Image 1 (cartoon, rainbow, N blue to C red):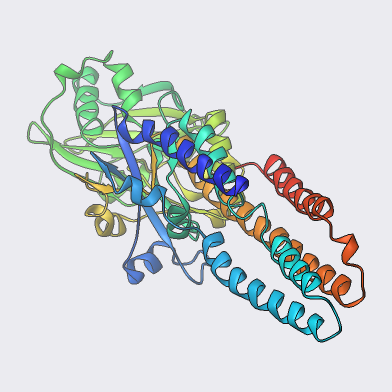
Image 2: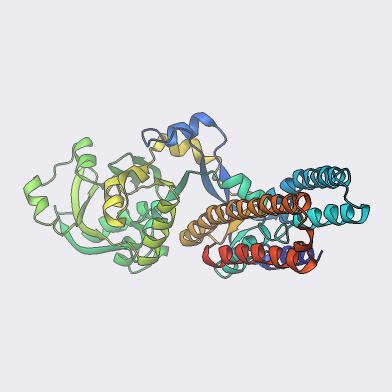
Length: 439
């Protein structure tokens, strides 16, 4: 009863910690599964995943059903429902059979009660609630939340997650090393047109162009018909002029004359990338860029890969390829896929801002918080499973010892102190597991 109450106290404290995330001001995001199996299959095509289970992050205004998720039953409740009647029947069978073996009624009652004490583990309410509480304390400091065991059931099987290239390369990750101009057009006007296009959509290039125009967003022009051509770049209309921003394939595809490969390679050294700008069919400028992942983002990607999670990347930057991400982050290319425009359209409705979503898991929007929350899901599930194994072993061994002592006259060994020591031993084993296991 004491440890049952302790487990419930952990639940109450977890709810209190997580409620700060639910009720906090600011942006909130949660995960949504890709329920359409055909879409999930297309998202992970060619990545060696036999049963794709993908998720996308969704911005939400309100997290609902928080208490329902927080106080939901966990796997240990289901195990206890099975364990209790089996233990009761087992204790009855042994005690009754001992009665017919010339045991006294008092001794049979002692055998019956000792078996039930052995089969009522101290750890029953702690196996799930201890790692959940630990995760709540740690994640809340970063802006993340795992509400309860139901969230683990819903999302711990996820093997692919949709992320934006802007998550992988946030502000400060892309550096501009120089601009090479071409033609007779005013370069300042051409760059303003390009900045207007880039800033009209989510892309890793926005910060670079904002730096060039000194952050003056009020001078940006209206943009029409922005289109990302897969693997090539952006095309749009600004002041009735066609503006192209992308790699040499985009320029050639639209009939724009560009320098030779040899000329381009003079600038594309040390891993640097080239980005072309064209106005009204004429090449205007060439930007020399480099991509440098931030350390905490690299660690976040490593966390996902260690959990066998595949990154499904959306991007409007033609320089960001699966090979580039694999090389810069030091992960296998089989863990990275660049989503086509068609697949991104399939996800558009799912990624719209929601007025209300279930409070299963939540995070403040940072990529590192998302990855940390997902990693905690897998770690919590692993910790609970290992704890269940320890508890099952403890009950089986304890029951076996009780039966042995009952039939062979060793009931004196099953004193209150010995049963208490036995239970505490396995309790310590579960505590050590939770200390060693990071959640």
